[in-house]
Length: 286
Length: 125
Image (spheres, each protein chain N blue to C red):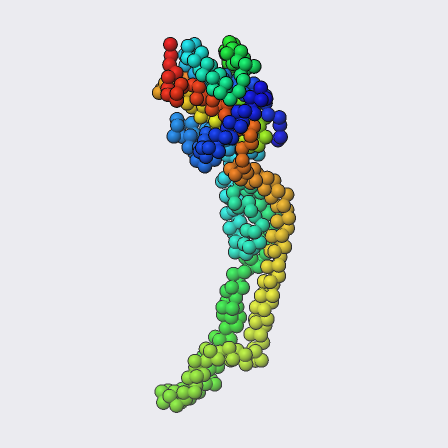
């Protein structure tokens, strides 16, 4: 019988070479598992079976509940979205899981990631405080740097640049054009502030604060990178498992069917063909 | 997950049992059963000597086949295949085979549908 099996295998291989679309190869991987639906409404069910068989032996549950998977995994991805602002690069690179399956196992880790890997977030005044950095120049200026403005621009200006105004409302104004320059001083304001550095140490302090704030920024980036790396390393384990799943799934689609399976399928096809002589439906009740 | 492939006899017999089970699930198909067996043996004979399995196939259903037995042997077959792709492909072939059997008379009756669903679900659990 081993000889028969070999002949069946050879026949199947020969047939598949002669007819590229022969048998299972035609409808199976390419059409996907949705195709059977057209045949009788069992497609979804057999699709689950086929998907399961793609990763586990028959009758065994594959890697826990796949049912709950997509949502959870996607939730995790969303959680990553929050981090997109930053470590996107490191993250995305480090997370092939986003490609699909793996997230399931990587998921727990991802959760852990944000929670554990990002205690920094909690201790990350920077992240939350970041907006301050963005809004800093303005807020900082307005709050601290511009108090001077309040205290200055008008009073000081008028005092210095427009004393003429008092005496020369319009003409003096025109005459005192240079003062308009001084008036447009909002630009030179920086200069004025520069001058005021000396007189108003607050401004200088603020700038220093900004610089400090920015100095922290690279530190944060570095920190995130560390976090990302550590996450990657932590994920390394799960990524391995994930990679196995992925490779299994990918392999399922691209992997060639073994000669043994081809022989089995040939036997099944023979039985199928034998159900109806000449390919017609003649299997009738007595 | 490398395992030894089942002997061809088991595979040939399982295919016969599967076809006969679903062909008979909604009635008595004695004559058709014989025709099916004969054609099946002829098809096998086109490839090689089937004298070793002829008797076995001809008497494959002397004792009524149960769904549990069918599923058990199907799982055994699938688990003997070396790769997930193999298991998927063989399951797909079996699925199409059964689908053809229950559609062979143009009507899918409730017992056939139930049996088919049972078979599919049994492979999941």
